[in-house]
Length: 298
Image 1 (cartoon, rainbow, N blue to C red):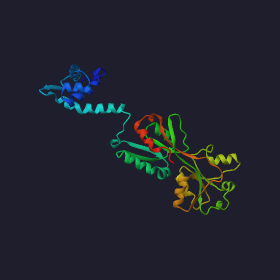
Image 2 (cartoon, rainbow, N blue to C red):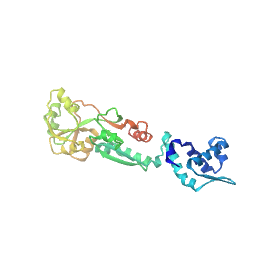
Image 3 (spheres, helix red, strand yellow):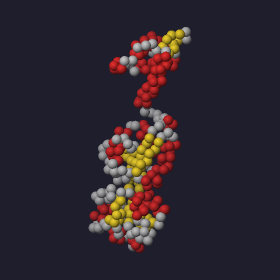
Image 4 (tube, rainbow, N blue to C red):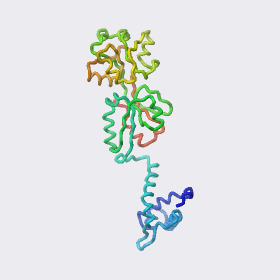
């Protein structure tokens, strides 16, 4: 077939070819496609004109495919399958879903909140490959470029290109060494007498510990900055530093080392952990299925 004639091709002929190839009979093919036998014979002639050679020959039992038709059959089946998938929004073949799904999150979220979910995804779609990567400030660009599918995190500013829903509501607690002197007099004033570890990615304008200090005439002392929340849990061991961490992370750290977890003596806002995705995936069947695993946890 001449490539320059592609604009003149009736792609309905591909379905006609598929039915003729399967039925090997003009009358049965016409009945299956709900057209007259003369219309099907006309389509058979058009197929010959489109491909510039005969695709079927007649015999006593009906028709049989030529060598050219045998060559075309698999390719046309593949094309029709792809076209059907473009318009089939109701089904997702999970058994044969062969895709790589990349999720960006903090290690403590992955360890404490995602392990069961990731296992469920693999059970539902065995051929899916999951890639779990650590948090990067450049996540909006990575999501724009299609390099990540979901971000699971908290305190992330989203613009109009991104959508989100609540995944889990955590709370901030204080994590400190079991021998920390502040434990003898656990008050707001005592907490601000000691040095804190601060997450460097969190601006002082939105950091609730900074906000409370500013609104209540306390001066916050920062003894160390880190980009990693997980690192803070290790740094408070055998020091007089205080870390303010999500409860899920703090509890994990307490279980592993000589630390103690305390409720903060002043009110702190809840810490919503959100599932974030690009709005271009709003109506994508595979992506909707993926997001369904990350609905709000109890």
